[in-house]
Length: 326
Image 1 (cartoon, rainbow, N blue to C red):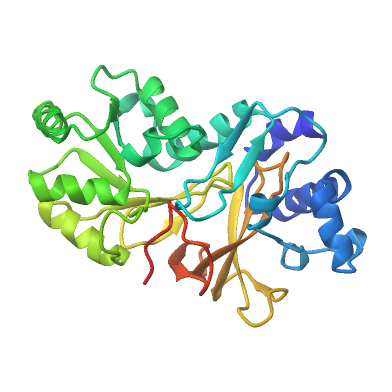
Image 2 (cartoon, helix red, strand yellow):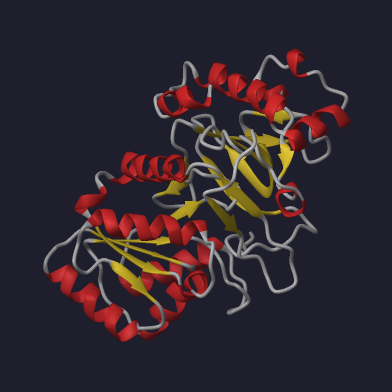
């Protein structure tokens, strides 16, 4: 099945998503020891599951304490969450990096067109300063694929970043500036310039560097500094191989192989395809780990499948990519 999976997962659509998700569930319930033990502890027979709402979602914290692997393999990479200095970091053991690459490249191009049309600039100082970041891996690959001579990472070189953006604007070059929140705010405080051909995308994360702010406040500051109508955002995490994107107003959309649901805050086994609650994610690219993740994010799913991230569950660990709450 896994050999065929790579061909099927990125051709999924609204009509066959559920059948493919149930196929992934059966495969993982049989070949993932941790997930299998979790199902057994719940007293559930996998053969009784007939809908995606009834699938048990693995709590995301299991990635901190267990090795979440479907089938036996030596990982090609181990991605590690940023977390905080006092938290235990999640680890995602990745069997097939080409599956991750295909997921984030196709996902990006679905929302933004060919990577080759963009100059890609990464402002991710806290992530560049450590190893095993899935976000750095993704942005580094997008930089390579863009092929633009001025694509690249910036640490704390705000003067050079300003000069580069000004030059790219003059050339009317489509540019993506993807950055961790505190670094984008630091840059905006030092420099202000109108951007007509640049998309600013924040990935979340204050990392204790600045006073916590809610996402709308951050976006207003950035929109004012750069005279932009909207600030884009990325929703991803170490435990997932796919990302959702927002082109403004904090409304995220997922690629076809990723689906967001919400679970009831009082009864986590009540799962809905729309409404408010705590976010559950189905990521079909996660075939070699677990495709069914119960996150600690609180959100709202709209009728069309788009969603908002409204904060964190009380008492959950603060994560480097998700420190902003409403």
